[in-house]
Amino acid sequence: MVITIRRGTMSDYLGMQKSNLYCLPENYHMKFYIYHGTCWPELSWVAEDPQGRIVGYVLSKLEDEGPSTTPNAVTHGHITSVAVLRSCRGNGIATKLMTQATREMRGLGAKFCSLHVRESNKAARHLYTETMGFTVHNVEKKYYADGEDAYDCRLDLDKAE
Ligand SMILES: CC(C)(COP(=O)(O)OP(=O)(O)OC[C@H]1O[C@@H](n2cnc3c(N)ncnc32)[C@H](O)[C@@H]1OP(=O)(O)O)[C@@H](O)C(=O)NCCC(=O)NCCS
Image (tube, rainbow, N blue to C red; front, side, top):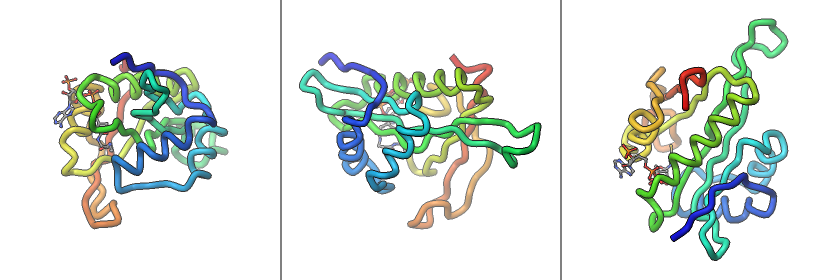
């Protein structure tokens, strides 16, 4: 099946939200997708099947570390959410979505990319640390609503693909 990887636009938000509901317990209101897409249009990417169905997405943003008014505030990217429908997994789609998002972040001046991942999420941890080169920066205890710890991971964008 030919899957197209492209930037997400306003007409994709519903498909992204649907994919998110299928794949993850962390779900968001439509305004959250609109906020990301409006503020950082370069940082939302989707995977589309030949029927025009959204089968995967990455939603990401820029953040400032330290008060943005201080001269040495470091801009970094943050992956808010990424998911691929179960039937399409294992084909490199998440890797492509993540690579596009992190490239764009670097283009926007981000020095590193951060994200959180559940300790138990082996597939995502493999994707981030083995495939993409993220390292574990910190463990945030009971980060998730159900009490699970999060790995706070970072990718140095100067060294990324
Ligand atoms: C995590 C997820 C996005 C990966 O999507 P994907 O398109 O299957 O990932 P890719 O095909 O790009 O695979 C990337 C790497 O992860 C590995 N991988 C994929 N699924 C795996 C699994 N279940 N267990 C171990 N490794 C796995 C692949 O083998 C590949 O490794 P390689 O680069 O060494 O060959 C997908 O499983 C998913 O949507 N999960 C539910 C949502 C989720 O957990 N999102 C992340 C929240 S932090």
